[in-house]
Image 1 (tube, rainbow, N blue to C red):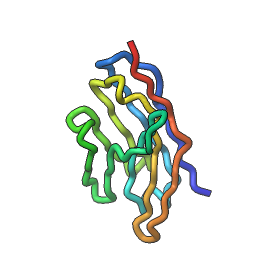
Image 2 (cartoon, rainbow, N blue to C red):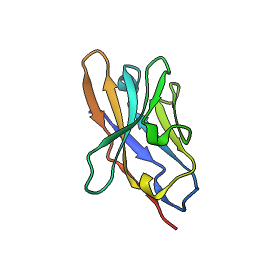
Image 3 (cartoon, rainbow, N blue to C red):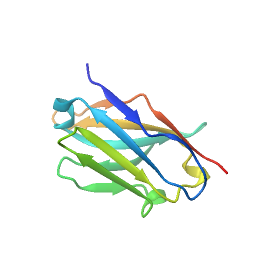
Image 4 (tube, helix red, strand yellow):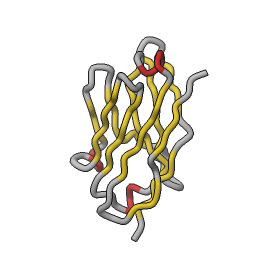
Length: 117
Protein backbone atom coordinates (compact mmCIF):
# COMPACT_ATOMS: atom_id res chain seq x y z
CA UNK A 1 0.00 0.00 0.00
CA UNK A 2 1.29 3.40 -0.96
CA UNK A 3 1.40 6.03 1.68
CA UNK A 4 1.72 9.74 1.20
CA UNK A 5 1.66 11.57 4.49
CA UNK A 6 1.32 15.35 4.45
CA UNK A 7 2.06 17.77 7.24
CA UNK A 8 2.61 21.47 7.80
CA UNK A 9 -0.78 23.01 7.19
CA UNK A 10 -2.43 25.45 9.54
CA UNK A 11 -3.72 28.97 10.08
CA UNK A 12 -1.57 31.91 9.03
CA UNK A 13 -2.11 35.62 8.58
CA UNK A 14 -1.91 37.25 5.15
CA UNK A 15 1.71 37.77 4.17
CA UNK A 16 2.84 34.84 6.27
CA UNK A 17 4.59 31.61 5.32
CA UNK A 18 4.06 27.89 5.70
CA UNK A 19 6.00 24.86 4.56
CA UNK A 20 4.14 21.71 3.61
CA UNK A 21 5.84 18.34 3.65
CA UNK A 22 4.85 15.05 2.06
CA UNK A 23 6.65 11.85 2.96
CA UNK A 24 6.22 9.01 0.47
CA UNK A 25 7.09 5.35 0.36
CA UNK A 26 10.51 4.99 -1.18
CA UNK A 27 9.87 2.94 -4.27
CA UNK A 28 7.00 5.14 -5.41
CA UNK A 29 8.88 8.35 -4.70
CA UNK A 30 11.83 7.22 -6.81
CA UNK A 31 9.55 6.52 -9.77
CA UNK A 32 7.38 9.63 -9.62
CA UNK A 33 7.00 13.21 -10.55
CA UNK A 34 5.68 14.85 -7.41
CA UNK A 35 2.90 17.41 -7.41
CA UNK A 36 0.95 19.60 -5.04
CA UNK A 37 -2.72 20.26 -5.73
CA UNK A 38 -5.21 22.35 -3.81
CA UNK A 39 -8.97 22.48 -3.58
CA UNK A 40 -10.94 25.35 -2.13
CA UNK A 41 -14.61 24.93 -1.17
CA UNK A 42 -16.80 24.95 -4.26
CA UNK A 43 -13.83 24.79 -6.61
CA UNK A 44 -12.22 22.07 -8.64
CA UNK A 45 -8.91 20.61 -7.59
CA UNK A 46 -6.10 22.73 -9.01
CA UNK A 47 -2.54 21.74 -9.85
CA UNK A 48 -0.29 24.15 -7.98
CA UNK A 49 3.26 22.90 -8.50
CA UNK A 50 5.19 20.02 -10.04
CA UNK A 51 8.72 18.73 -9.60
CA UNK A 52 9.93 16.03 -11.95
CA UNK A 53 12.30 13.17 -11.23
CA UNK A 54 15.02 15.32 -12.73
CA UNK A 55 14.14 18.27 -10.53
CA UNK A 56 12.42 20.42 -13.12
CA UNK A 57 9.69 22.57 -11.62
CA UNK A 58 6.52 24.19 -12.85
CA UNK A 59 3.93 26.40 -11.12
CA UNK A 60 0.46 27.74 -11.71
CA UNK A 61 0.68 31.44 -12.51
CA UNK A 62 -1.06 32.53 -9.32
CA UNK A 63 1.76 31.21 -7.10
CA UNK A 64 4.82 31.96 -9.23
CA UNK A 65 7.39 33.88 -7.23
CA UNK A 66 5.71 32.97 -3.93
CA UNK A 67 5.75 29.17 -3.73
CA UNK A 68 8.72 26.83 -4.15
CA UNK A 69 8.50 23.08 -4.61
CA UNK A 70 11.49 20.90 -3.79
CA UNK A 71 12.27 17.25 -3.19
CA UNK A 72 14.73 15.45 -0.94
CA UNK A 73 15.38 12.12 -2.59
CA UNK A 74 17.30 10.83 0.43
CA UNK A 75 14.26 11.38 2.64
CA UNK A 76 11.59 10.48 0.04
CA UNK A 77 9.96 13.80 0.82
CA UNK A 78 8.59 16.66 -1.24
CA UNK A 79 8.10 20.15 0.15
CA UNK A 80 6.06 23.19 -0.74
CA UNK A 81 7.40 26.42 0.69
CA UNK A 82 4.64 29.01 0.59
CA UNK A 83 5.49 32.67 1.15
CA UNK A 84 3.42 35.85 0.96
CA UNK A 85 0.28 33.85 1.54
CA UNK A 86 -3.04 35.44 0.67
CA UNK A 87 -6.62 34.57 1.61
CA UNK A 88 -7.16 33.14 -1.88
CA UNK A 89 -4.53 30.50 -1.09
CA UNK A 90 -6.90 29.02 1.48
CA UNK A 91 -7.62 25.43 0.50
CA UNK A 92 -6.95 21.81 1.29
CA UNK A 93 -3.56 20.97 -0.18
CA UNK A 94 -2.95 17.47 -1.52
CA UNK A 95 0.31 15.72 -2.31
CA UNK A 96 0.33 13.58 -5.46
CA UNK A 97 2.81 11.04 -6.77
CA UNK A 98 2.55 10.47 -10.52
CA UNK A 99 4.36 7.29 -11.47
CA UNK A 100 5.91 7.85 -14.87
CA UNK A 101 6.15 4.22 -15.96
CA UNK A 102 2.55 3.26 -15.25
CA UNK A 103 0.90 6.72 -15.36
CA UNK A 104 -0.63 5.89 -11.98
CA UNK A 105 -1.48 8.47 -9.36
CA UNK A 106 -1.33 8.26 -5.60
CA UNK A 107 -2.74 10.83 -3.21
CA UNK A 108 -2.21 11.99 0.31
CA UNK A 109 -5.03 12.71 2.73
CA UNK A 110 -4.78 16.48 2.38
CA UNK A 111 -3.79 19.23 4.77
CA UNK A 112 -5.78 22.40 5.44
CA UNK A 113 -4.18 25.77 4.82
CA UNK A 114 -6.17 28.78 6.02
CA UNK A 115 -5.00 32.34 5.41
CA UNK A 116 -6.97 34.80 7.50
CA UNK A 117 -6.34 37.94 9.57
